[in-house]
Amino acid sequence: MIEQAISQGARIRSVALDYYQLAKPNIVGLTLVAALTGIYFGNHGVLPHWSMIFWTFLTLGLATAGSCMLNNYYDRDIDRLMKRTSRRPLAVGLVDGRKVLVLSLALIIPSLVLMAWLVNPLTAAVTMVGVLGYTVVYTMMMKRTTPWANQFGGIAGAVPPMVGYAAVTGELGAAAWILFIIMVVWQQPHALSLALKYREEYARAGVPVIPVAHGVAATKQRIVIYNMALLGVALMPYFYGMAGGYYLAAAIVLSLGFLGHSIKFLFSDKDYDIRLFLNSIFYFIILFSVMVIDSV
Image 1 (cartoon, rainbow, N blue to C red):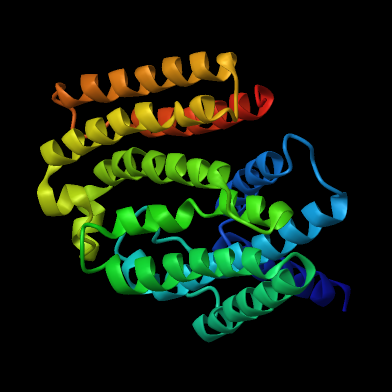
Image 2 (image 1 turned 60 degrees about the horizontal axis):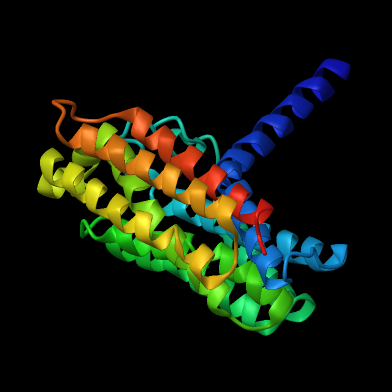
């Protein structure tokens, strides 16, 4: 009896872990950090009452987790064809697809309703745009049909700061749009550098990412172009008055370093450089951290 109970408990923990992995906790965490930046600037450098942050984080986190589950459900067939994703619970068949679909919708829909009620309707509407952009436009409509999918996916991924800003202001001011633009541009070299590493797997799965559709050289050129644009948009918080001189110096140094790395990669014989992808993560974390610390 005891052994049976232990075995049943182990199975429950295993299934719970599978669903936890399908929710992509890393993406949920980054989403909440980005939203917190929007909250901070929307409330003029002061964190609001804990209840505002709690309900915004809870509802946004649930909506994001549900969206990630829905993405996993829809992509389970191509996930089996790619080594990087072949061990995901749905691809392996460890969980039932119908249950994942039901749970994803059960997370998304009530969280949006709660957000409209406990935070404000605009925040729920902005979150819904992000959810639909990621699950419907990117995952279902574009990912398998066009190399432009990442551009539209980047728009959905840049929504969290706007969600945070709208949560404390009830509107979308200039600061929210600036944070949004920075994230839209940043996500392009970030995603392209990873797509280069896994281009053969994407090709095998029939996913026409830029490296598959246009080749390595064209992808490397686009990374440089996006990083040139990033150098410009990263300076916007300073000129708009969101952050001070320390941020300006950090933005210039970080952006020039990122751009220089991408130019060096452009003229190299490498087909991919995973350090460029890691550099993009470092860039994002440091840039937004300094922006918050040096806000004015």
